[in-house]
Image (cartoon, rainbow, N blue to C red; front, top):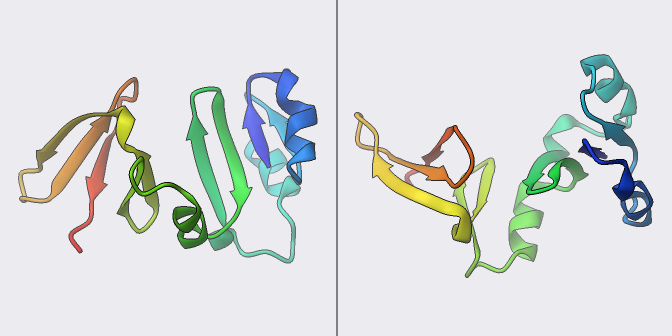
Length: 113
């Protein structure tokens, strides 16, 4: 499932076996309606890229195995980041690792392994 604000990626999405293509802004009901009924949500991952975000049908471990570990780090059981986009790494008040990505407002937690 591809979710984006750009309609020009629709053909490419379906060439890559997209199950649906949604243009932003989307409604939750439309998103849920597009999900296959025989899949559990645990096997769907949100992928945020510069052009928008996509929902892919792949377990995060499988995705991590396909990515180059020199450029993509799994910092948390549910989070993989492109190291080229890390702007700051620090410690939280509780001592855990946190990082920020360039051009993103949120702080991401780094799990302790």
